[in-house]
Image (tube, rainbow, N blue to C red; front, side):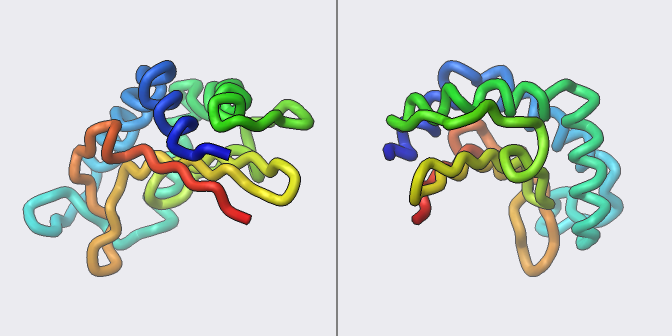
Length: 140
């Protein structure tokens, strides 16, 4: 499995989805009341996760992530056994951003859009570029 190929596919072919995700995160960060190093921040993990999930859902991105996950798996050299759904375990939202997962035999492809950085226990909006925000790994 080639995690870099999946990352590249998301950044290239599905760049509008990554940009829309970062736009949703920016809207969430606009409501933060504190800063870390001058950047909007909060220590409220549950609030970030809830607000980001709601923003992504309103934008249709949770469904879009489920729809594009097989393409990322294909780019990585795998094949999904069943179509994913827009919920766990395939699509989840953490306090740093959305996570897409596909279990393929004994391995798992994990693709993250890390919209928020964690700095000293705070979730910080640093307006990341798509190339910085998107991460992919193969585990197992």
